[in-house]
Image (cartoon, rainbow, N blue to C red):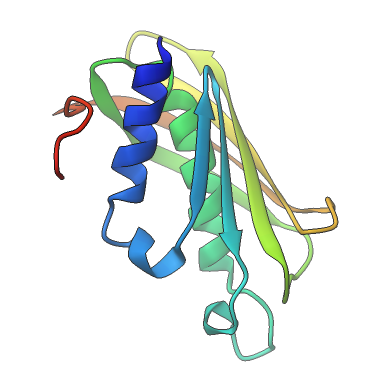
Length: 143
């Protein structure tokens, strides 16, 4: 894979309409992705901490793009994803670090860890991803 592929995936991620809400940052390398999402009160559940759905988004996205960094022609799809929540967060940033750990012909494995602004692990997840039939658009295309 090339730096162009990684930057193209980053551009695709940031152009997704849902990311207008979360306002994440992303950095992709071969087999690895890092997502940073600033914590905001509008992410909170009734108990005053970030809702697990935001944890899921960060962890799935990090594992997903770690895997997709290894696939040059098409986007992958999340087939399954398991999440383990360990501690709440109510300030700072969420930092998800994903790694690809398995590469087959059709299926891939990815895992991720979520950290708070103090570097403490607050959640982790792992998933299975499959090649889709949706081509990755060339760099610079409007999505």
